[in-house]
Image (cartoon, rainbow, N blue to C red; front, side, top):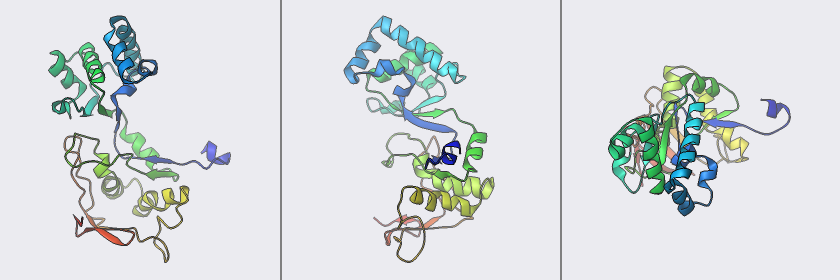
Amino acid sequence: DDARAAGVDVRSDQYAYTAGASTLSIRFPSWALEGGGEQVRQRLSDAATWARIKKEMIALYEERGFSDLSWAAVASYRPDPSLDGLSMKEVAQKLEGSAWADAQLEAARKLMIGGGASMVYHFMSQADIERIMKHAQVAVASDSGVLEPGAGVPHPRGNGNNARVLGEYVRERKVITLEDAVRKMTSLPAAHFGFRDRGVIRVGAAADLVVFDPARVRDRATYAAPHGPPDGIVHVLVNGVGVVRDGQPTG
């Protein structure tokens, strides 16, 4: 708000979950990641350097109010997919034979030596989601890459976010109105980025249309089963071409 009052054209976007997603590397101090792969592995394999890294990692998560890494879960670890979906506590038990905080750090070190992992981080609050969602300049976005169906255990936002906002936060919690939710998904971001023929329904605009049932729309993607498609999305057209018809992708 302060920046906009000062003339800066800035807005925000949000996904409606209390967990974030990123890489395992963000839990490590930045200096430890310099130079990439081989240099990272060398630092993590040196006892004295690892002791320093571990001390800083503990300080980083304690700053957030945590005592270990149990709030982090593996979304995708290519060298060993059996770890996908496990919390770092469970990963530590499997790899180290212990679930204690130090074992979780040792497990994190092994995953980084193996090339790193995609992670889901459970560290946000429901109150913040609702407070931020109400702001007029906050758009709705999933912040997800394109997901391959059935691959890994990614964050459910990639398949569920928009339907979750419409079902959970509009219909059930009544945090925002249906009209405001649609604006946050369409005309607000389109206008911000200057896409003049997108995000609105009018003559001459691109025929990007989503037909959904407001009484039935809901997300079905969960942290445990994140590949579930939403309910209540009836038809989707992109540039006038039907890509979903009667709830089914057209190919």
